[in-house]
Length: 452
Image 1 (cartoon, one colour):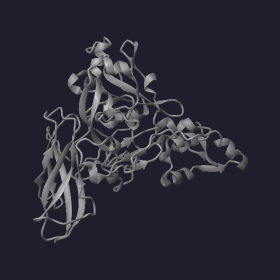
Image 2 (tube, helix red, strand yellow; image 1 turned 60 degrees about the horizontal axis):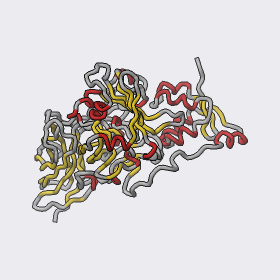
Image 3 (cartoon, one colour; image 1 turned 60 degrees about the vertical axis):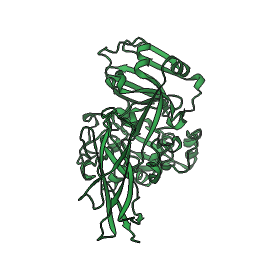
């Protein structure tokens, strides 16, 4: 048996009984026996009223006044070198920086502008000199190959793929309204669509002499240059068959919408894994391993997994659930916004939004309702994808929606269908889970009709 305590500011806390419930797994052990201030400066999402109140339930005492300064001596802000961001991005957390663009403008551009693309960072943004950058690739025999950024740009054909990246927690705020979950309180804008350019991973592997039929290659394990105070990098993986198939379109990308990758989005090189959850599209890519097993990182093993609505933190077993890869069909109304006052023209209001399905499944229909889902009208779709099963980009949609004449309170609802005829579930209750991921329920907006 052991006791686990740590220091925070002037307090001493015994968190022995909380270790097994910590959403971050055994990372809580990093602060054992000392101050957690450096770690909470890095993972500043802890500094919320709810978490600080929970922490206080474990306080067992206070440091002497003369010891408080010594405990925090030498602590620097690890986020000082983070890049500047667009003022219209709405932060879900500041340190690390996580933010989404305004919903009203999201469907205005088929390609999301770089500066308005949602940002998902787990740690401080690495400040990388491209002249010093080296990507390490370990083959199944354990041999390491190194490529510079210039190598990747010069030795391989430049390929461009338009693909969505979506956070697993997109629309988490709707789950929070039912019951509080763990994670950033994302609205419906933790998603974006961009044209990414770079080298196909499969071309790089062929160049290195990798036998693509080698059965030992089951997973593509990646690490980023972003690290925690112990030097542990962000890590993730995805099934190798996605990368080894040229039609899987996995890229080592160095451009975003025709421009150099912004720092927030992985400069100088990132993985683009089309149709797969954002967590596997590793930024600031440092290392790739062709592995028989998936990544052992916290973010692969103890995060980004879905569970039964009745599973709680006392019963959850992260090892029992597979890591999220392809994401389900979803759609969102971008305009009008919740609570808007709308004026019909010829008895109709214009509704517009986005829809997307993971795994390359093309959106084939978006249904929109003005009466809470009793009657539906198909929307007009905009998409550049021509393949039904290799459609990585999103679909924008719009419809002139007739509104009921007998009420001034209207519930607008949308739901989408993909090329495999997957559709969205009606309610958030059925997809609620303690991590707040994979919410793809019908999207609902309540507006007031003002008749001229």
